[in-house]
Image (cartoon, rainbow, N blue to C red; front, side):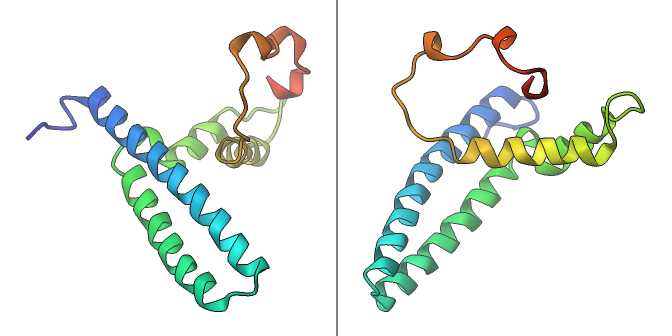
Length: 127
């Protein structure tokens, strides 16, 4: 058995690949749940919701297997950036939480790197 402490990048890659697969499955289940609710099909909605909640728990457990996916250190590190001239710790925590929420809900597109704006084109608040 491989020791995740010795093979950190492998551990990260395995967790990340599993996270991506679960995210795709969860997205489909969320769509199915929305369709069942719209169709007023309580039986299917409740069954889908149970499976969806289990998938969320699986995703949470999987993400906890690698430090890089833990939210606590991410927020703690963001709060360390606070200073009197730039912003309070609460602002940086809000930014960190916002980035996580936005990243989880990005629409699937056919964009290439050439379609992305250069950092010099973005307003300073988004950098």
